[in-house]
Length: 192
Image 1: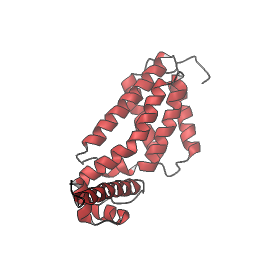
Image 2: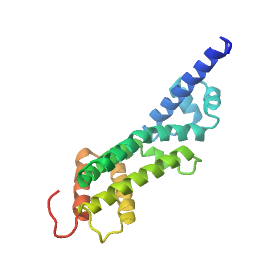
Image 3: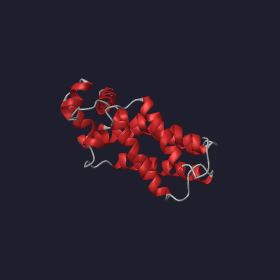
């Protein structure tokens, strides 16, 4: 490799990283329209540089969202492995609400994009979430008269609604999770 190629590759890696961080920053700003131009401005790069780095806006958004989801997926896997599945599910629901509150724009603006990385991440997250619910159910912390798949969808959808609330706060999230967990508890059982 010539010395002229090495700096160009280093610049390409740096530009890709800057574009990815800029996209993630914009995805955390409610009301922001994420365009190649907005990402380029945020990154301090030209739009052509962004396109060269990722090929398409969809590919950049896909990489950014997958990157954002990765820590949540790791927390989900940790929750599945915890010895107290009901408490782990409760903590994860609060983490999920926090994530959705910070990144609701991800679902709002990009549902029609071709996002294979994000789709794979969401599938992994859904599986871990379902595993948490199954473990909590097996431990006797979630009632058995509600289908686990229904409970998974219900919890996912309602956490999203709470996260989007104009009154969203840690108190609202905590109250919601308490009510949901109480409602899912088998009849005749009390306590947490």
